Amino acid sequence: MKNIKKVLGTMLAVAFLAACLAGCGLFSSGADAASAQPTTITSVPTEEAQQTAEATIAPTPEPTPEPTPEITTKLAQLQPKDGYMQVKSLAGIDPWNDKVVALTFDDGPSPVTTPQLLDILEKNGVVATFFMLGELVSENPEIVKRAYDAGNEIGTHSWDHSNLSKLDLNTIMVDQYGRTNDAIEAATGLRALIDRPPYGAMNEELAGQIGREQILWSVDPEDWKYKDADTVYDHVINGWDSGYVADGAIILSHDIHQSTVDAYDRIIKELKNEGYKFVTVTQMIQIAEIRGKEIGYRFSNAPTTEEGKKLVAEAGTSTTAAEEAATYDQAAYDAA
Image 1 (cartoon, rainbow, N blue to C red):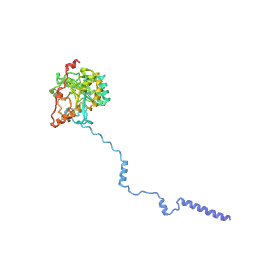
Image 2: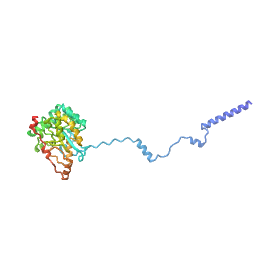
Image 3: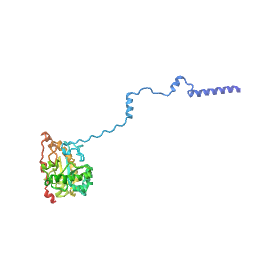
Image 4: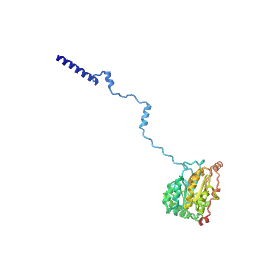
């Protein structure tokens, strides 16, 4: 009996061991063994799958640089040249559909009022053109640099506000415009491209000898005479004997007077309400050319879009009445 139990125990142990070995796959059939092998992918990916994979691992391309804004002026004095400030482009301006105006400020920079005006311009998001006296540039170079770095345009206005029509060419080029440009270059690293003669005193022969168009104005609120913020505001916004604001206007003011600076936050806001865009002088020159105006030895405004359409239709005839009207009363200015 004991032997029978031993035999049965042995048989059960062998059966159990066989079952375990079968479960581990050691006694699998050929078909089962084949199915147990690791799967190997031998098919070729589709073209679409290859392109997707390549796109996934392709390096990110470099961004395309923005094109350099085109300068549209034909004037020789405004062509790019080493060591000189660049003409402002018309990027973001539609010369035929935008109402444009240029704010210009003379006789600075003042260490007190010019920074206040720069704050106003920056707060309102507009730019202007500053015609500076060399002697004040040399005293306040940090203000000149701030004005330029903020996107405003800088021009010369002589060294000491002399009447250039009474000086010889060498004195103008060396002691007045030249010396002032030296100071502007020392402050900004670049020389200015544009000039405004004090009192608007400039004739065609002298301008031709200087070799640069001289910048005047079409609106003069005579802020230097009245020195009252409300009066300056009224003369600019509502117009008076010395001109009125229209599309293409260049407004003359002086950043050395507190009353002028006090008026300009209101002036800018009102002109914005009337739909004006603010441009610099070199931008206004380009707009004037596009609108068909021939730029003479003095430049004071661009034609309105309606005037421009007529000029273009008439194949380049020009109007100069506004230029001829732009002059100072020198004795009154000196007395003030």
